[in-house]
Length: 97
Image (cartoon, rainbow, N blue to C red; front, side, top):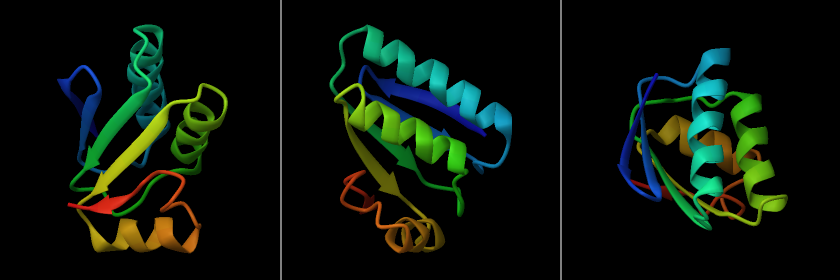
């Protein structure tokens, strides 16, 4: 997994979200954005078909505890279906790319 910062409030996650390192890398980026005062984050996930529970927890914490609006832009149908089955589409404002 690789994270590219496209703009102050936009991240693109390339590759598959599978490992513990994915969580720590993403946490570092999101925490940095929150410290900079960003209140709405757009995350593009064009490749991954899965997402770890720790990353879901990280996004939920940013949304509920930090008051950040999280917008996921999902490229793979499998990941979109997973988010739908977990009732996370509205929470993360998930959209298909």
